[in-house]
Length: 302
Image (tube, rainbow, N blue to C red; front, side):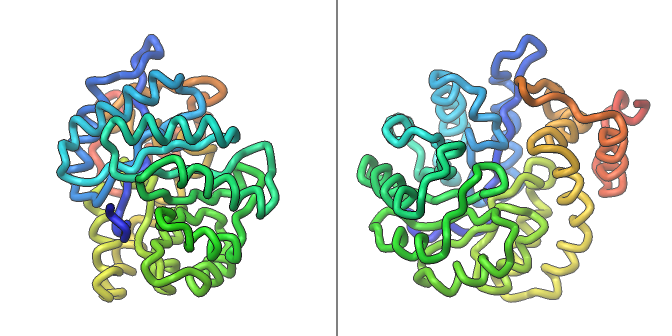
């Protein structure tokens, strides 16, 4: 069991064809690009991958392709979130059968469980699998927050090994790093806060921006992990506009638009996600160009 998840994990987008099906060829290319870019692990079927709109069969297919392409070179951390504990546990078992090395599970959305409910939810999932499990806390999208004291309790469960902390609250992040054991991986869920979180003990990031610039995100995080914060700050400053533009609209709308502008996938979403407004698309296009990324002819002329 990999107990110390660290570095850059990419929250993979799920590419679709013009007809709306999973674009398996593009997915294979995207996964290989991440491995070649040096990321430390990949995360299929998270919310960046539009997992709520994927059928169970589609989730399993995306995970299976990712595992096949990775071929053991880096770990695969499969997203298995949801608001029904029993169903999430079934998803976890299915992912385990497909050969992933770990699981990422977002807090139950809409239900708004209590802290005790969150503890019982994650404990039940952990009991249903032998894989390491990382809690995903993103209260701005789920309506509930995993408090530091609850994470400290969860850290005592043998195979709950980390948290993707996307509360956006630096005070809470400080409290989390102070509350959990040293071998519990605190990973950032907001690219722009990766460096500040690592300065207080975070171990890396589950990144949206790495879909676009995997190698550059790796340079930032590797520098911070080695204690070279001067180099990490230089990378952070250079990448900050790209990190921020990915959230001018709801994730994954901007990053998928950006990837389409780079010719990496089709600009196809599943409702209720839609393409970005034109003024935001222009902002994304300019930010990619400013970052030195090579736009397609169509994107340059748009």
